[in-house]
Length: 233
Image 1 (cartoon, rainbow, N blue to C red):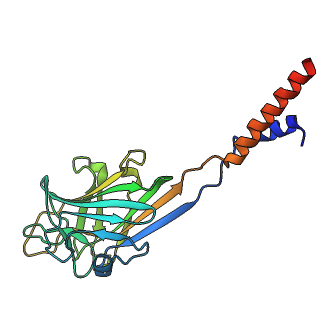
Image 2: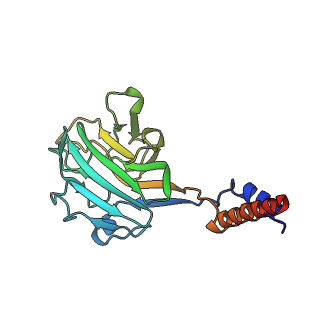
Image 3: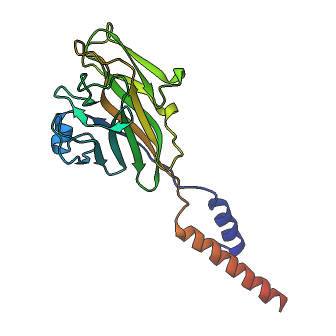
């Protein structure tokens, strides 16, 4: 190929990018997941203890494409995460132990591996009885952030999936999501919600075409300059 044509091809292709890959990671918070690290993505779990009422206030999850930390909180104070026997994440509150009730929350702090970004986050939540259970994403003072599960039409322990993407700062260095309970604690009722599933969509950041292309372009420029100099002699 003539040097000038080589340069033109290199300049055109240099604006192209390699195709990006999209992937969805699904996490199911059940006993098998926490006891052995089993799950759709086979993550590694670091909890310093994983049984009910274990005193764990944070859980670190490591998977091939996404790492995240789960944190429990009650009224602004780190509190123990409860891993229910029937599945799901709650907090070890008093007296509504196991669910996410009033002034209780579970937070996810995400860290995609280099080369990937989060494009969507969905969570599946359950409630135990036939009430309408309310909760908030991120800020309980914003009415628009309130969500609800109608237990009268949803079978017990059947997750209802919510799209939490609008509440996640996807461009932040550490994107995060907080689920805040809105139900008052009641020792005689199973109030509040539990987090059963988490789904995260990732997109591979497009990278420039190979360094070979760049090298070809530079070589073409060098050859063109050499010919121009030869022509002027």
